[in-house]
Picture (cartoon, rainbow, N blue to C red):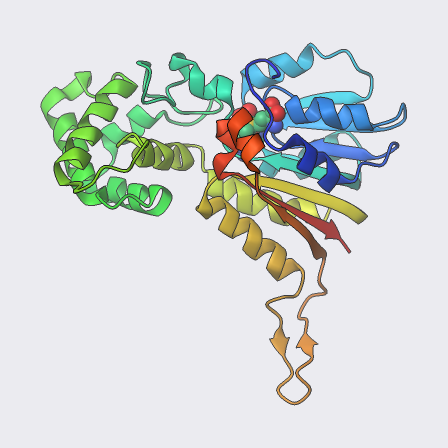
Length: 312
Ligand SMILES: C[S@@+](CC[C@H](N)C(=O)[O-])C[C@H]1O[C@@H](n2cnc3c(N)ncnc32)[C@H](O)[C@@H]1O
């Protein structure tokens, strides 16, 4: 455990990175540094690790690390090119992305991610930028809310939940959604009244909170941008390792790697040979799921999928 966050599938990630002792690595999601510490342990004295996180609290933890091989930058990982340029680094030997939120973010009620604890309905990974979940809900239309819940939460009851959210804003005015609990109560009321059989072990507000978090932090846009940008900065033979926690993320990573490895290339109608409009840049190496022991030790890993690809 590092600062309240147990890293997910650390062995698969470190093996996937195939660390070279003198290599340059990027951890785009430092969190509390569980994976970063293991990368540093695999590096020799001339290796280096650049860590990125958009959360000022995560960066403050990284700033306390005393290791000349380690640097941390507060940025969105989609800004990886500017980060590397700023450090005069051209290409790197590996990149790790451990997507989503960290346990300290989820567990601190003040961050507003958790439907289990009472806190302000914020949900920003970087609370110094953008609008909070509450600010957005107070000015969004019923249709916009329903779309977010459907697209990012795959919520079956998106429309009635959106209706209930808008009604709560209208009825409670400035008192609406001051807390995460207020939203959780409104959502639970709708879901419980419509669900024939409750999903075992799943809070009725899970999908709504996931959807809002993904939307507020533009998580899928960030992922699309970083994947595209980072591949151009990988050395030949360098590894890309991504841990996804839900099907929307994993589908994007899977399709990206397939596209970059030429799997979707058109075929010559006569010879059947692949026609590459652009040369393939990646080779898929592995897809790893947590085993029972990992899930028992770290329940957060139960939905994780690690994908590893190599730069050609
Ligand atoms: C799952 S945690 C990473 C945990 C970390 N691997 C560890 O072992 O401690 C994800 C972290 O990535 C950060 N993050 C998520 N999306 C980001 C983005 N687009 N840019 C930068 N940081 C991001 C979050 O703030 C969070 O600290």
